[in-house]
Amino acid sequence: MKQVIIDKERCTGCGICAANCPDRTIHVADGIALHNGTDCLLCGHCRAVCPADAIRLPDQSELLGLATITEKTAVVAPGTTDCAELVALMRSRRSCRNYLPQTVPLDRLVDLVKIGTTAPSGTNSQGWNFVILPTREDLLVLGGLVADYYRKLNRLAANPLLRLAVKYLAGDSLGRYYRNYYVSVAEALREWDEEGTDRLFHGAVAAILVTGRKDASCPAEDALLATENILLAAHAMGLGSCLIGFAVEAMRRTPAMKEKMEIPAAEEIYSVIALGIPAVHYVRPAGRKKVVPRIMRPAAVTGHK
Image (cartoon, rainbow, N blue to C red; front, side, top):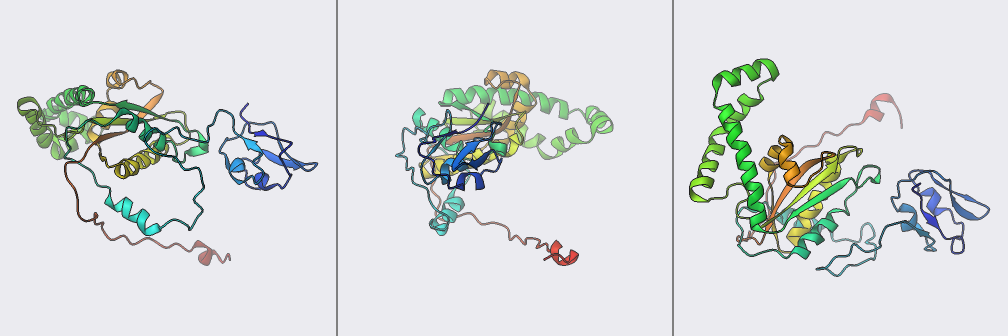
């Protein structure tokens, strides 16, 4: 049974933990906090708000165990962060497609994975997993598998009768691929084979693959939130990064490729993050299309206040 551990000697019975428990598994009786004996999320809200430090979570460490960063355990209270600096960090991270051949230390890659796990997850399932490819040679193994997949796909897409049959039986997915990607993929494969030009990973020297357990409540969202944490932390560490969607698509459609990367059948791949020391330095942040959010006031329509 999953439940928090409450130190009865420390507990003052203030009830803050019970008021903040999203799963309602804590109550106060006879001046002390008690767990009701059912499974809880182990989200840690109760521990985080307890003024008496009377609650522990089983099998969870206070520290991430980072090797290349000095961790700070103090909570950053809402409204105390320089939001302009945070936005500047977010805008400054760009997809890097030009890397130096310099190796990224393995302990730094491991730290990025640990930082990824600070992201939220549905029902606190933390159903993500990670595969680190630490060297350029390891990355080239995956690159070769991805290239083999697109060679086969291009051969299929080049057949007009097959495109027509697929469109009739299962929609126009093969036709769309042919119109949108066939030519550029063919050229990329030619450059890979004849010139050794890497248009998939762009010369990156390492990668982190982010997966999610299929039985998690929202594995895609969990994995992508962890991915964003990794991208931002990589930039703060001085690393360049780029999401490689072509590799994700190939792995999703090729069980043998997932097996080669030691991804079990119970997990799905959601992102492949290429990493390395950037060989280019940008001098201004990325622009964005203007967004106009839709403001909804259903309460005004229904008369609720």
